[in-house]
Length: 300
Image 1 (tube, helix red, strand yellow):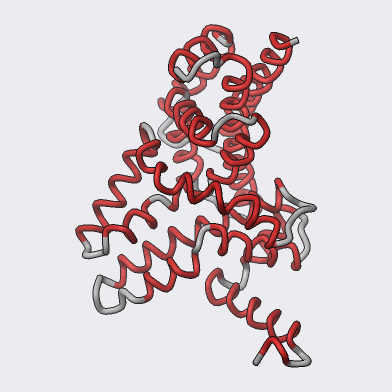
Image 2: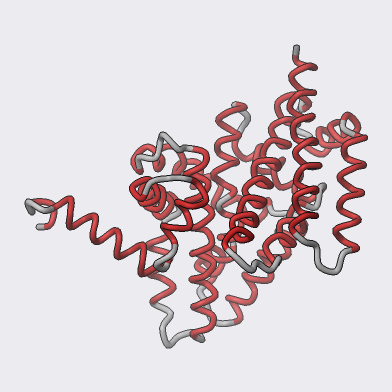
């Protein structure tokens, strides 16, 4: 038994290292370290936590079992979706739980809420996020993938946002599903899914640009979460989220106008660049900070 071997810790570390390299590639740990300043051990802890929280080992095994049942290209597409979730989830934990990365603690903090969100997630997606999910889901079904597996993999592109949603619910003491609905409603109203798609589609020529792209996406997730928290914490007297959002929009009218003007310029540009993304992120940060500050002043 490995657990009783005198080199148990070394054997487990080697197995984990092999698992990470085989699934994520040789550069994964280095990129996570470069982006976050985390140690190798912390990257490994965050990776382990994400794999367990989202049940990704089981999901990966189900995809592997599709050998000779669906096209290899479909399997690869599904695996790449899982890899993206691992990367984003790992980075989120490294940035938001830097000193609380023990896998047992992370799993206890997030797995129960994820079970609640898993069933409701597809129905909560709105706008571009919903369209993307449906397109991927239908594509997997048509390729011969089982319905439950197709849904799980199709939802993985947005699944990492569950971590921030659960954190927001904990911070505000607002019911989890209500926070999730507000999060995705904000994304639709402000076209944040479209904006994130533009960032993801941007071409990177070097490691600095790759880091910048990842940073913009992380900032966007934080800003969307902060906007949802600001509206929920200070402006929602009842469960009518649309009424709540309209009240928030009236309160932030001037900054919203600036953001929509920025969106119009992005839409008009055939190839938005990193300078435009930086300015747009700054506009969104101003809106998020105003939302939080405005609520605090109102509450006071």
